[in-house]
Amino acid sequence: MSSFAVKTKLEVMPPPSPESVAEVGVRQAFLEDLALKVLYVGGPVSLRELASQMRLSFGVVKELLHRLRAEHLCEVTGITGNIPEIAITSPGRSRALELLSSNQYAGPAPVSLASYVQQIRQQSVRNAEIHPPDVSRAFAHLVLDAKTLTKLGTALNSGTSIFLYGPTGTGKSSIATALSQAFSFDRVWVPYAVEVDGQVISVFDPHVHSQVNSAISHNSDARWVLCYRPSVLVGGELTTEMLELQLNPITKFYTAPAQMKANNGVLIIDDFGRQRLRPEELLNRWVVPLDRGIDFLSLAGGKKIEIPFELFVVFATNLDPATLVDAAFLRRIQTKIKVDAVSPPQFHQIFRGVCSEARLRYEPAVVDALIELIQNKLKEPLRACYPRDIVNQIRWAARYQQREPFLDQEAVLTAVEAYFAAGTGASDDVE
Image 1 (tube, one colour):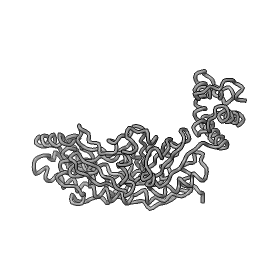
Image 2 (image 1 turned 135 degrees about the horizontal axis):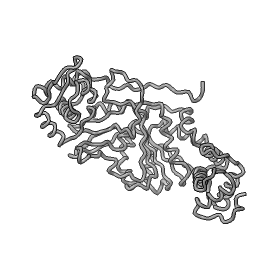
Image 3 (image 1 turned 180 degrees about the vertical axis):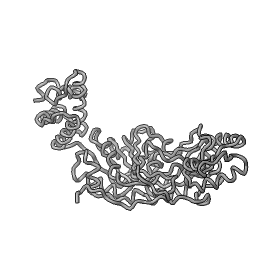
């Protein structure tokens, strides 16, 4: 069997579809209000269409509309194929406007906090098994030695955290991004939203969660979306506020913070130490989550809720870890990997791959001369980013001159002079 054969895993099943309002796990009054808002926003619909929009079963929505009809907030306007057509009434519109003024959420019915916690725990990234073929597949596009790959695979099996550090341009960000690919065969269930004390927290984000396009059992709870394990990347824009519930002042409902959207997946903090919040602030914020796998979020009224912190956290930095955080925080990050300069053979391998992508003819002698120039004249280490950056310079110059790009001595020297802060001086530096 090929070492890259797709592995089969025990996939966590979603909660079954609730067949009554009592089984939904959310207060009936909340669901009735939500149904009224959906009717107001979407206009007259069939009972089946309303059920589809709320992601609830036909029977549950029929049960919800019983009181709404009794209070003349909605009415049946017709029957099509034995399915009632529902429209909001004038009193219903008035009531819906009142509801929308306090909360404009009119989407799929949320799940309860208890249901969310249970499902996220069952799908924990700590339960994922990562083996050498998974790591080889995830990092196939990068040039890494066997020792580093083993460290990465070991860290992934911890399901906790990893610290990637080293000089700039050595590929830390590329490694961090590729880590999530090791989980690419895993599928998890993400809720559209979570309800807490009448408040709504929107969780599913199509920009973060990649939905799986496969047949879903009709018996599964449609309030959950089948997705691949998420991967969330934050960089210098990270603030303390991004780690808390975001209350939209207009819509009046919450958006989940970065770590909640990344639950059951990977959260990458790139350029750690250069964020708008100080490393000490993040340390204080995440000491308990990294240790105990729980996080505390605050609602606008001050009430704190406990949510799972079930994600693999990647810290990537080109700063000295000892200057960023104290020993107690580093101890909580189970694996630390220094990503350093590459060797000449690795530099050649990276350059060969970049040339293949750019459709340039690879010239080993030219790359040998470039290595000599970088190491001996410029006194720079061989960074993994140099091949792509140099080739980009060559392609841009060729585009400007309206000619085909070539990897030759003259093109490389011109690229080096444009790329590095120090000039190379003479054309005979590249022979």
